[in-house]
Structures are given as structure tokens and as C-alpha cells.
Length: 114
Length: 113
Image (cartoon, rainbow over all chains, first blue to last red; front, side, top):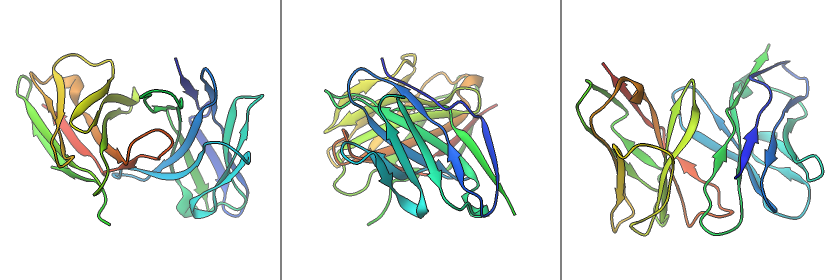
């Protein structure tokens, strides 16, 4: 079975500071990993994914994520946070075999203060 | 290219009624998945359809059902509604699944009175 853990319910950061939203996963084999963002009253928007290759993945809106196989982590990062980055962030995992489903973490609320 | 469209956006029902939600995927996408989102349980997978066939099913009672049409549009039906079915129901599409990201609609907010 596959699972995703987002250990922080909420992350607070000041505008202009770097931000990190943590994600760890548990799967058998190599995972497909995704980050999504959700704004109020909207669906989820895809930010970035890791499939294979370079451990540092760059995505939309200046976000990036680092895949660490030994620590089974896929933390989301941004060098300089914006107030508009305030939203709910979801990490998700899928195994690359058969018709596997996408499993989401419970989400982390990011609050960026001016 | 138009995104994933879900209708209606808001719905109010009473216990015991049934409801049908609709999802139009991005043109060319053959995989459609449905999720239930609640504050307490987060995002829970309901089912996935691919080329009119149910490919995966989550751990929900039989009151929850779905189908996909030949044009890839999908519907989700919930019968004998319960208070606990109040949630945001999200539909997502992708070309085939796998390593391809899912694209989400803005959801249908279902409230049960």
C-alpha cells in the first residue's frame, strides 16, 4: 500500500523568506510524486512532478521540490515567498505499475504574512 | 484548451434523496477520477474511469456509483444521501494516468440538510 505524510498542518512564513512544505512517502518501488495547490473554493492545481532523473524538480510559480530516495521525502520549496502563495498544498504519490491510484497527503496550509 | 468542467457548482439536498454530479474532462483526456474532500478526512479517492470502464475503486459504500460515456464525460451518483455525504466532490482528468498529472475541476459543493 502507498501512503503520504505531510507532518505539518500549517506553515507560517514571512513574505520574502524561503519556504519549505514537507512531504514523506511510503511505497513499494520507485514512486511518481506530485505537488498540487488549492486556493479557496477552487480545485487542485498541478505544480510539479518527479518521475525519474534529476532529484531537483522545478515547477510552476517559482516552486521546486527535491526528491530524496534515502529519506523517502519530496519537500516543496520556494526561495522567496509571496503573500499570494498562501493556500493549501497537497503532496501525492502513485506507483508506476498497473492502474495505480493517486494517493494524497492530508494537506498543509501555507500562510505567508506581509 | 478548456479545463475540466463540473456541474453544478453547488447543490443542496436532504437526507434520503439521490444526486447526480457531472464532469466534462479536458478534450482528449480519457481518464477521469473522482474524489471526495472533507475537512476531517481530506481527499479520498472514489473511483477512476478509463474508456468507459471503471479502472479503480476506492473504499466507499455502494451508494456511490459512477459511469463514463463514450465522449469521456463522466457522472457520479450518490443514492440515499446521508449527512456525512456533505463534501466537495472533485473530478480530475488526465490523458491516461500513470506519470501524467491530473487536472482538476473546481468541484461540486454538496450540502445535505
